[in-house]
Amino acid sequence: MRKERSVITLGVLIITSVALLLTGCSKVQSKAIEISSAQVTTIESSESPVAQKVVALANGAGEIISAMGYKSILIGRDIASTDADLRKVPVVTSGHQVIAEKIIALTPDLVIIDKSTGPQSALDALAVAGIRVVKTPEAWTLSDLPAKVGAVADAIGAPASGTALSAAMNSSLAKIGAAKGKSRVVFLYLRGGSSIYLIGGKGSGADSLITAIGAQDVGAATLANPFNAMTSELIASLNPDVILVMSKGLQSVGGLKGLVELPGIAQTDAGKNKRVIAVDDSLLLSFGPRTPDLLIKLSAAMAKAMK
Image (cartoon, rainbow, N blue to C red; front, side):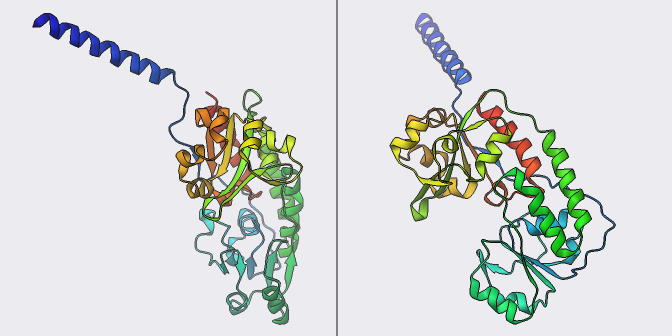
């Protein structure tokens, strides 16, 4: 009886040891690497802005104004400006749609918009109400950032502050280290509830970030359009090492498990090893004062994924 117990005990120990060894050697992630926030690059300025009651609807405009030290002039923002410092500034949009009545009721002396702000009927209503509306350029690459920051600073009448913030951001960007190795990355834009599955190509915005950390955006290298329909054949042929997604997009397909079950994903190295990085939706393509710290965190996440 003792001999049988010894044999059984020895067998259990061997099985347990092998299991632990296999677990320790496995590189398969159990969950996506999440980046939910990033620190803001800020400056101190003694310049007094001309505008005193500003509604910032352009992507990232509210964060830029706050980063220059002028949060007190913000009386309204869009839903995508989610930095914690702006929590008390009222959201004056419904989703991404402008509600003219809400803005007019605030009696702003300036509304900042960009190409994506709409609908046009709401913007026309603001003009009829005599409110000054300034359209600023969008940013889809890191090189677009100075023009975007400068335009917002000019709009509120604080051009020197814009120059100073751009310089501070450039200084932070210059310190970002590239991830070791040329990891192959694909950016996927996912909205499972609407059956939207897109692969980021050249000009998606994510390609600029991926390149900045020393990785290769294989979608941008192959696909000329910013966003392209995902097919199982296409994603399998791109064969990324890592998949980059927005957090809500990942949730919309059922998390990491649901993503890997999408056609073609399981055939990629990223799918096999479940190497997925999920970034907060409003942060990833914000291209503003949170972007330098985002890149630091993205570089670290890439290194962690490729261990």
